[in-house]
Every structure is written in C-alpha cells, then in structure tokens.
Image (cartoon, rainbow, N blue to C red; front, top):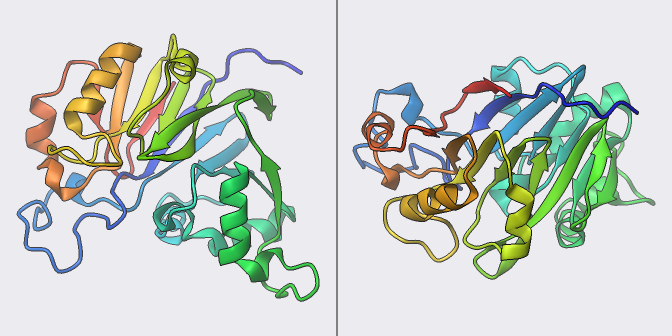
Length: 260
C-alpha cells in the first residue's frame, strides 16, 4: 500500500446541535436570522480523498445533506455515537448500498448494539426487510487502522460521562459532542493541520464544550487551524461570533468546504 500523505477534502454537511438551527417553535433572534450561515442542519462531515468518500455519522438530515451536496457515491460511514442526531439517517444509506452492496460502517461496540436495537430490521438475519440497507460493521477501539490507504486513528472522548469515538484522518481530526478527553488520548492530536471540534453555546453545558472550553482546547492542542461545529442558536450570530475568534479559529457553517 502507498501510505503517502493524502489531500483531504472536507465538506461540512451540518454544523448544528441536536435540534438544528433554527429550532422548532423558537423566536430567538438567531433562529430568525436571514444569514444562511446561521441555518444549521445536524452535525456531520463528508471526507473525500482520491476516488473515495466517507461520512462521519448519518444525521437526521442525511438525505437532505446528500442531495444538497450532490453526493453520488459513498464508501462507508464512521459513527461517533448512538444519539439520534448522529444516527437518525441510517436508513437513508439505501441508495448507496444498492451501488456497492454491503456498506462498511466503523463504530464502537456500544454504538453497534444501539443500532442493532433501533434498526432491528436492517440487522435481522432471518426476516431482513428486502429494501433495507446492507451494512458491514467494523468494530473500532483505540487502535489506528487504514481505510483506502488513509490512516484513521480513533480517539476516545467523553460526552458527559459517556465514552464516544472521535477520529483523526491523516492530519485532520473531527471531535463532536466532547466535554472531556484524557491526556493520553489528547496525545493523538499532536501536529494537526485542522481540528474540527464542538462549541455548543456561550454558557457552560454538562455534556458539551461551550465556546470558551473549545477555545481553551484549541490552544492546548495547537492545530494550524480549527473549525467549530455542533453549534446551537445560543452561541450567537455567525457574523458576530466570528469577529471575536483567534486568527486560526473559524466557525464552521453548512456547506463549507476545505482542502487539507
């Protein structure tokens, strides 16, 4: 295999929190914003290199995101954890499964068990629904592995007290729903070109970084650039928040594309 450095193309499919922005039934000023960057679907990214493409998570807005970005092929999915905003679009993998057969999915054992329970008709061996997607689970732990010649490093982070999986792809790391991380796992984030990390709101939250915690984390990890995601309306207007960020930190927004 040729494990030379890959040029990675990242598309921010969604940058919103579990309820998205605008939130249903909210009259908060950010929810009423006309700035398209303040309209946030549930968080996910598309990562592509060479001729392959993978998503991190299948959000509740997965179908809309695939149509918006005109995605015609997908080689697999990396799951972070089992909360609805990160797995709700699982069934919409069907068109891609029709193309390639079994869709490889990468996830920890806990997330797989949750998917098997919530989407029993997909995993059933005796009475599998004929139109259901076919998937090939690959259990990840804390050990690096290669996918299509790209080194992938799982990183254990904590969503409150819940251990979930973040991922490093080459020199890019994607961390969502993070509240804490051990010093040992933090070592996996050295020498990053790009760090993508959650920043839910201004006030503290029991299971997510708020803005200050995210900025403190960026300062410790020292990536060349950082992009903030998993954002709620309570963070504020994209335009206003962006003015007060460090020079190497940027607010993500839906549809943003970067190349590393």
